Each structure stands twice: as C-alpha cells, then as structure tokens.
Image 1: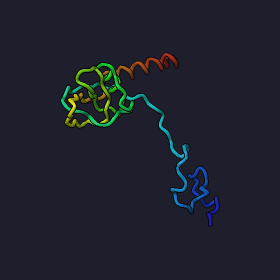
Image 2: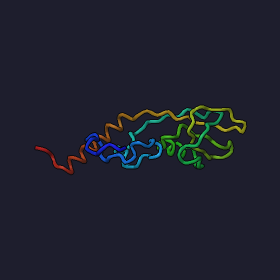
Image 3: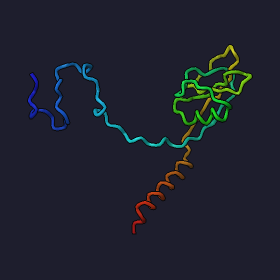
Image 4: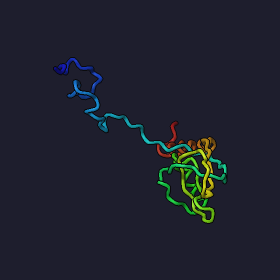
Amino acid sequence: SVAPIAAMSSKSRNPPTHSLEPQWKHPLQPDDILWEPKQEPPPMKCTWNGPVDGFLAGCASDNCRSHNGLESAKEACVKDEQCKGIVKVNRNEDMYQLRSDDKISASPSGEQSYQKSCVIDEEKLHKNHQQQLQHLDGIHGKAG
C-alpha cells in the first residue's frame, strides 16, 4: 500500500505515485533535473602541435565536416569542446576535419594531424570580467 501523503518527507515536491514500482519504469522528467544557467565558456589560449604524420580518429561536434584552410579549421576547433585536433585529409588539398581523439594513429593514406592544447586565457578572462563589471556599473549606476 502507498504511504499517506502526510507521512512523506516535507522535502518532496510531488508525492511519488509510483514508489513501489522500480525506478526504471519512470524515467526522469525534465523538471526533475536542476539546470545550471548556461555560462559562457572561459576564453582559451590554444597552441598546436603539428603537422604530425598520422590521423586522429573520431569526429568532433560537426561530424567531420570539411573546412577550407588550416586557420579556419583551427578557429572552429578552438570553439568546439569535443575537438582535440585537426586532420589534413588529403596531402594535395587544403581540406581539414575536426577530430575528437587526441592520439595520433598511423595513416596509410598519408594524412597529417595537428593536436590542440589549450589553457584558460587568464589575461583575457580578467579583461572580460572587468568589462562585465563596467557594464553592470553602467546599468545600475555607481553606488555612492
């Protein structure tokens, strides 16, 4: 039998109607999860190791879309958290793909890779923080 509502913990928002059934029969609902407000990722300072002979496996978030030119690919990779490096797909073309693996494997077709290594750009982070504070001062006026 189901316990009366009065006996339930006061912390429970909604009394469970299915407390005797296994949890897997009742998947989590979106409002069961508390979402953190989406914060901007911190600015990153990235360095590149390459070209190194070999390839990186796995596609980054863009499903191995081809990018024209190394700089364009690097820019896209820096913005993609899944991207660990870039592969030059064909020796004779300036086409690159973002990859999710950071281990270089031998490439029978002569691919070349660039591995990404990033750290938080503390200087830029500090500058952004100062700009946000100035913006807030502008909105709320100076306290005095």
